[in-house]
Length: 337
Image: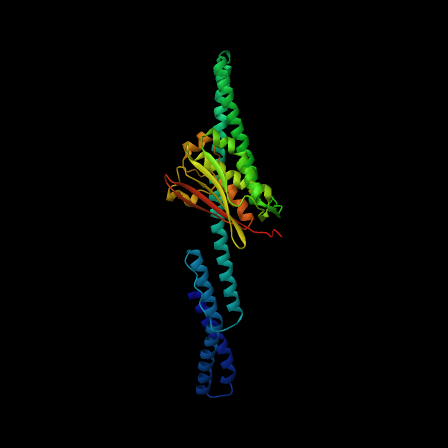
């Protein structure tokens, strides 16, 4: 900026000398010098306040951005074009900074997602490959081993198919391709159907699955019935997986003036406090060994979160280790008249 100041001063002197030269031919030396000094002072002041200061401000803004410092908006008294340029540059640089931060975040999420997907896909594929290779190398002759290995291979393929379906679903939800069919419907039969579908699974694990609420009346809510049933199934299935034999899982609902609150509660192993903020992240598992034993993909709760957000609802979770977990969300209540 020193070169700019020097150029301004030189330009002022040249302009002043040119202006004073005219007076030197027709006036005394004293008058010429007085006029020269006055023109120098006035010219430099005009150039300083209307050119030098705004340009200096722009230089400081750009330098601050280059050094990743916070940009402070210095107020300039004049309302000329340089003030508008300064505001535009401030806005542009702040926008660039936000865009760069978002790009860095998205790149990190993308890398983590690809790493998780590749790991989740490789696990059942390699397991199935190992089972088939063992069968081909002589285990086919043993009927008991052959049947056991084929059942394990089938389980791995089913797990792989489930994972791919959930990946497609969550991709469609996040990209906006999954369109909701919103309408008012009776939520009681939907909850009852979800509980009935998982009753045999709960019995296999010696877990009591029940439903509570005003089951003898019609209660309408606004939403996509199919997607909301997927939410209930995912939550109940998750609760069963993380419960011990003789524990219980309960689906319940209560009426509010403008909404219906739905609960899925279990008396299972619970979730430690440090895990609660992350349980809705894709592929995040509280207990990785247990998740793989019971066939979890790590996407169920992420899908639940996305579907409820599409319904303009949020899901809350309360849990205590050894006491169980409770998931709660609300849906807009409709008229039953």
